[in-house]
Image (cartoon, rainbow, N blue to C red; front, side, top):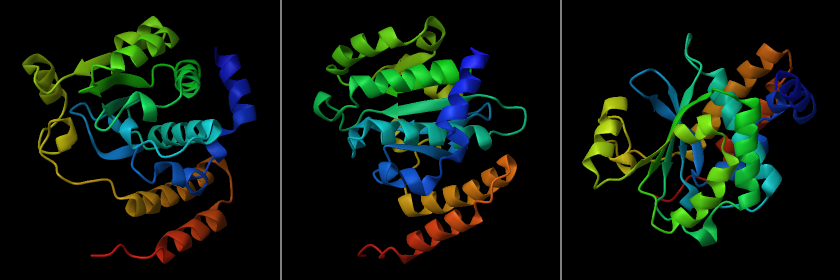
Amino acid sequence: MLQETLKWRSTYKPEEIRWHEVAHEGETGKLYRANFHDREGRLVLVLRPGKQNTSSHDNQLRHVVYLLENTIFNLPEGQEQMVWLIDFTGWSLSNSVPIKTAREAAKMLQNHYPERLSAAFLYNPPKIFETFWKIVKYFLDPKTFQKVKFVYLKNAESMELMQRLFDIDILPTGFGGRDNSSYDHEEFSRLRATDDIKSAKLWGFDDTRSASVHLTVVASEPEPNS
């Protein structure tokens, strides 16, 4: 598996993906790294599949890979895993990620980022999700499958699990917490552009110019109406 991953990284070059190349994928907040962590100090990726906004298979995968790499880059010292929180508000079969993309994303996660996922919490998936899940679960190896947890607001046991793993005061309301803040794409983009500069230095790239260009573009975006 290591040899396959090294070969994949040499051709896909995940460390060279920059936020400004995939930022349009994240405009709706369908996938982002949260500004909080679980009680064990693991970083959190938030997925909101109901906010799907694009159709390009390749770009969607690059967006996922970028955020996996970015999360790993920002893991606290001594921490090697992350947690996924998946909010199904607004999700339907009509706006779901294509099976092809879901399959390829699962393959990349399992083959090239083994043991990076600590747990994935599927929060309040609708009944119709069972149809999608029956297909997707066959793409998962047994270890990954065991890490997937279904959480329902009206199920006391599953909500207790969330409270054991997360501080409810900083957990978003969309996952049963008390934090009312929402995804800010402009601020998220600023932070990722800064990360890109740091990452480029780590990998030995001179990325200051491209990141500076992106910061200028973000800064020039019109302010939303108040």
